[in-house]
Length: 361
Image 1 (cartoon, rainbow, N blue to C red):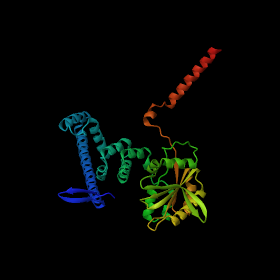
Image 2: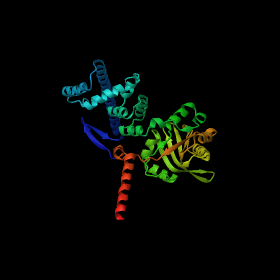
Image 3: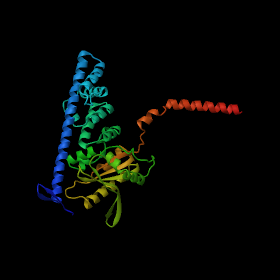
Image 4: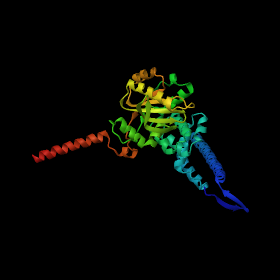
């Protein structure tokens, strides 16, 4: 390593590894302090907005004032505090709507909303009508440190209705704390709206596309998944086997096998997955790791057949469906014709064609 000398107060200081460790230590402290300061500022801002929302709502209720008071407040507050951006007419209406949305919940909700930026809070109340669902997304956004775009994606893919729904045998194969966490970690169905595939795509095509779009795939799987490999090679008793997708989950502290199936779930899939889990636990699992978990990810499943298939298996596993959905952007969706409009246009087209045919005769 090239060492660099500098003179400070007459003394030679060598820019060595020791110096750079000192520099990095101080930089880490500064960054941590900056984060704490921004979190503190955000909490104070959210607290202020909560109090403003309460004052406006209480006054409108008692004095029976309409929306005109919000317009006047926006003008006067912007005049009084020109450097603050939060007193626009639109934002004051958002503050009022936000306070009304949570006003009947207990005080714990104030602690939750204070841990997210204002933009996240607005996304939640604009996209969700049920306060209990909103609290689910507040908790998940805080726990997983979601950006606003990720939050929007999770809401639009209806994570709350899919989380913890996987058919599984975790209660009988895992100790209580890990079985609960495993159940909460997995979902059903998984939505792959980022894949450019048709409905009849085969397993290897799906696997190839998932690994190609691994960032979006990990986002759909959820926080904590770390990609190990696809077509992961195992050798058992001199024979070669290949696992479709292998992950390690940092929260569960275990390996997670995903077997992709392009069609319906079949009971024999559970037996093969049980075999793979035994092989992974024998070859990869460390003493500190928890038992590996397997997921059969299929196009369709029969609930009863899936439950019977997992019932007496010795290894922890679940069965989930996946959906390949090419979502239509909202702007485009709004511009598309309705069924009635299409039928009307088709009728007109038939009449025109008939008239042209008669003229030609």
